[in-house]
Length: 183
Image 1 (cartoon, rainbow, N blue to C red):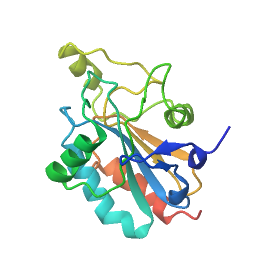
Image 2: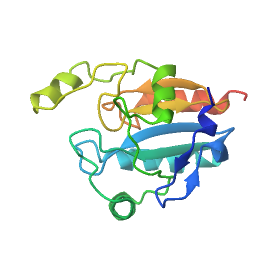
Image 3: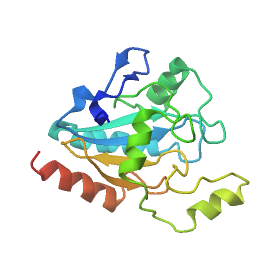
Image 4: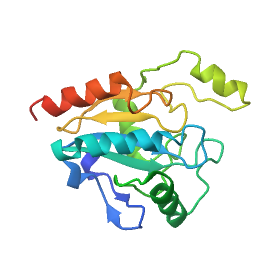
């Protein structure tokens, strides 16, 4: 099995890439969407990135259209939206399948390493169902803006459900713990 850093990826601009440039950093990997009720989390993600990037921390965004078609745009539309609406400066990657049989190798490994997410509100899934939405059960991702924290060694050390805001104390404490840990 390859490490997270070796999995072939594409940037939002279409360039071949992987996570190797981020080896030795603490990463928060997030599946994003532009047309979701949780889309304002981009603001908190950018805040985290701005606060911690000088300490070896990166937020990595992976747009996904897996949940109710909430990321329908092209790469150019996604980039424009993120820049103009939320001034996103953290790295964004190409649209990625994050659930189901066709999920990307990256998300296959993330989920295998952390099959259960920390939930902020136990009623979150019921709230989604209340909107008539189909909700995945773990270990699959529940919805857009699920967050995986990866330590400097490339180990997935935490998973936060979509309802856990990027600025939640649990997320911040986990990031700070990993930033102070030795690689």
